[in-house]
Structures are given as structure tokens and as C-alpha cells.
Image 1 (cartoon, helix red, strand yellow):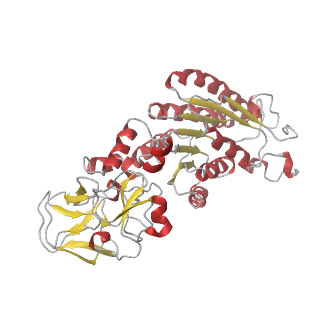
Image 2 (cartoon, one colour):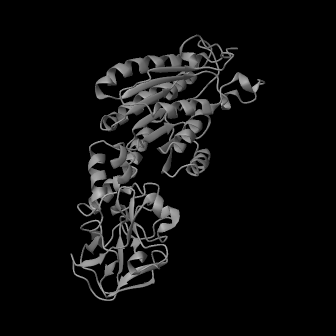
Image 3 (spheres, one colour):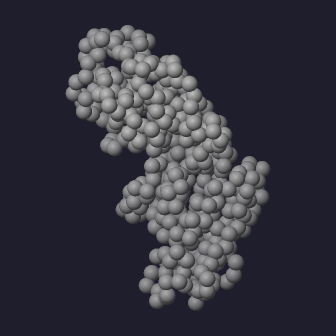
Length: 431
């Protein structure tokens, strides 16, 4: 571990500070006297612990602040909370940092005011999520507070120049398109490796193959944004998957066949600071009918959702992907893209078109180091086959696809899986 001998063993604070009931949450720190801008108000102190040491019981709960990657400053477990440990969060605070432990007044503070910080300036634990919505009441309140809020433009603007140094380093890397986050300084020095945590946007993420992919990626520690047009199913799925992961799981209701919805999706990503490293474009529909007698609207809708929407999403996120370190586009197609598909020819044509797009997109984005994969599952046990009288082993399990996608994200950056075909052991069902 690095040398942290400059960190005080005990916290110091102005004598005018006191703890009392807070309108924000529980107890808070208040000043009995006015404080001038730039005055040193608190210097944090305590014992330096790794993430595992703190959560292993060596530190007193609710007293930890981040001072480096995976490194906390906290009160020893056998001590009591001190005045500085009662500091509440605000999205527009009146204190900020000038180094990893020194808090100064951001502006003139009146007597009787509660003293606050934005947790994002020091929050080391990327798995953190405030258990209830923020109640700071400021005009800039972002309601949901997480350990990744330092990625938000509004947070970077509000606290510019006053983050803990290690958070500032994260921001600089992030703005350069590098989203990898070291698990800890100790591990980083030991083997020189960084955690390959990615932001993954999954369309059609509320059920079937999309849900299975999300489940496996959540278990691998990736941050997810699930997209679907059915709000109730989507919210339920996001809650289930959040229980499997320490990372942020976002969801957004969006009909990918609607251009206005797609533009709103991109704006949502910008607002939440969710710049995807990986697009898993899985949303699709299946409409029965043939190529001669089916209404034209059925063919139009199939192409719009299963093919054209994917073209538009890729165009929308292309500039974002170019800035990332391990960018990937994974197009969930079908074995229907390789042969006639008599049980759903409209669907089959759309998947053939998608495969042609994937092959050409792979060549087009090679110069940008953006990997493109066409993933073609055969018959899979999803809603499409609901009610079919088939033995269980005649269809793939959705989890099979999820496991394969999770494995792909572990590959080195120079490895590209261009096409994958995965079928049931006994082959596809065509009639």
C-alpha cells in the first residue's frame, strides 16, 4: 500500500460546529457562527483501510471517506462517531475539498446553516447507491446519488477543481474515453491491471434473451441500462437484476421503432452520465405471415423494429463509442439469417438484412477499433415459443446466450468475434 503517513490520525474541525437534527436526513453538522469563504472547516483523520478491511469490520460504520482507489479513511471500529462523521450530502453543497482530507467553505456560510458536501467528491466505492432519494432541496438536486456520479457533467461543473485527487484522475480518464476503474491502488500496484468494468446498453432487456444477457453481465460487475417498451416488466426486471449486482442498473422505457423515443434515450444517457462501452441490440418483434399475403404494415413494422432501429441507434451512439477503450456493438440476430425461415419469413428477411448490415459495419468501424459481432441464436425458449408442445431440450436456454456474451467481454481488445451461431443440439425447428 502507498504511504499515507501525511493523513491525520484524528479529525479536526472548527470549534463552532455542532451536531443536531437535520432536515436533510437524521443528524447533520451545523455552524453556530458565520464562516467566510475559503476558511478551513474540517480536516478528516482516522485510520487508513482497504475496501476489504473496512467492510471486514476494522472500520466504524458510516465513518468512511474515500482517499484513493479502494482506500478509505475511517474511525476504528472500537471508537465512536465524531462531529465530522455526521456530514450530510447536498447536490449543491457549501463545503468542498482542497486535498484528500481538507474541507473548506465553498462560499460565505451564515450562522445556523447546515454544512454539506457532495459525496461525489470523495466517494471511493463505485457500488454505493443512496438508499433513498436525496432530500437536499437544492435546485441542482439529482435525487438518485450513486458512487458513479462523478461522471455526470453537472457534478463535474459544480465541483470543478475540488474533487479528491483520485476522483479527479478518474474524471480526466473518463473524459478521454477511458472508463476502466482500478479496484484498488494495492491491486493496481501489484499486477498493473485494471478492472474491465463496462457500461452496457441492452435493448429488449426486460425479458427473454435480453433479460438473460443482463443477468449474466450484472453478475460480472458491469453497469447496465436496460431498455424496453413495457414499463411494468422493465421495472420488475431491473429490480431483480439490481439484487444480483453492486453496480448501477438503470432502465428506460423506449419503443425502438419510434424515432422520438430513440432521441430521448440518447438524451437520457447524457443526463445520467451513461456513455456506453457496449451496445447489445436485442429488441425485436415477430409477426406471423408470409411475403405475399401479409399486410405491408406488418413488413414495414418488422423491418423498422428488427433492422432500421438498430441502424439508427448505432449512428446515434457512434461518436460516444469512438471515445471508449473497449467499444463493442453486439447485434442479436438469428439463425434465420442463414437459410429460409418458413415459420416466419418476415422475421427471416429482417434478420438477413441485419446480418448484411453487421458484416459491412464490421469493416466500416475497424478503423475506429469498435468491435462488431453478429450473434445468431437458434430456437430459444422465449415468449415466441410460448404454448408450443416441445420437449425442453429442443430449445436453447436464454442463459446460454447470456453466458456467451459475458465471455466475449472478457476478451483482449484486439480480439473480435465477428459471428457466432449457436443452435439446439438437435438443430432448429423450421415448421
